[in-house]
Image (cartoon, rainbow, N blue to C red):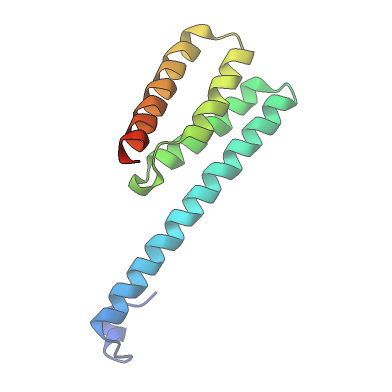
Length: 117
C-alpha cells in the first residue's frame, strides 16, 4: 500500500492516481457481484439438497453484500432464490411481502424500459 510519504519517491501524475482509484473501484464492484452470485449459488445448492434452513444463511449473506454497495443495483437473483426457499419452507408470512417487493420492483423496471423505447 502506498503511503503519502512514498509518493515523493515515486512521482506519479495526479491523473494516474485518479485512474488507479477508478480501476480499483471497478475491481471491487466486480468482486462484490461475484461474491453475491457465489453465495446465492451455494444457497441454491443447499436448497436443492433439502437443507433449506442452512440455505437461509447464504441468502442473507448475499443480500448483505449486495446491500453494502450502491453500484450493485437491485439484487433480483438472491431475492428470488430466497423467495423460492421461503416457499419451500412454507413460510408464507415471510414470502408474501418479499414476493410483493420483487414484483413491484420488476414492474417499475419494465415500465421504465417501455417508456425509453
